[in-house]
Length: 276
View 1 (cartoon, rainbow, N blue to C red):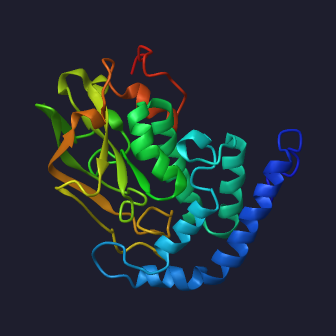
View 2 (spheres, one colour; view 1 turned 180 degrees about the horizontal axis):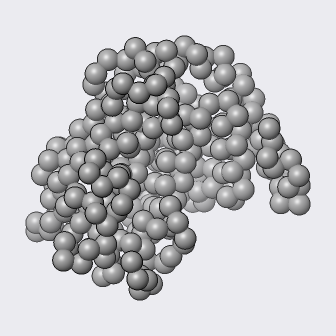
View 3 (cartoon, rainbow, N blue to C red; view 1 turned 90 degrees about the vertical axis):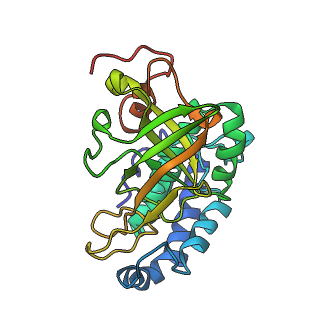
């Protein structure tokens, strides 16, 4: 079903060309393999994601310009609008929810958060390679004991000279087994509640970072992440992970303003957060 077929007043020729491109890709390069891919997920062993098809299909999405579809060209993106992101998600969802989740997490949650709030240095170092598909990214908010109740999170970060020491565990993190970069939320000031939360850029290569898949769910097929009932959604654990202070996004009012836009109403980081 094409949910935007009556929205011609909003969609232009570029959107329709994009739709055809994504539909051709999904039907020809994804659909014929879904059954085998899902079975391979159910049979996957413990440890990191190793199935051979995962990274090539994600690289193909990067080559098509999908992973940076609404990221400006100056940051290696395709430079289209948010309607283009909607078109890509719609066409991928027609064939395989897993690849739509990639767009929602890698692009929507991580890359667009960096685009809106990252420093210029962070955009060049992290956003650009993510938009081009050279790097994959995840978004780490949910925890085992607090779910997505960010105010109740238990992950912490403490300043140590020119760095932060992160400790905690995140769960149901889509793409955690294949991501190169993570946006990780942690409390930097316990006395301030939700206003004492900050966001950190964490690389998989950092010492102390590890992930593992969660087994035992129905029809696990997605590359290292949540896929409704078809998923391998890993935990992400950090034990005394030292993170450079330049990779923290820490403002006086805490992180409420930063984690609301991807999952709620837009808010600028320099706005005073409203009541809890």
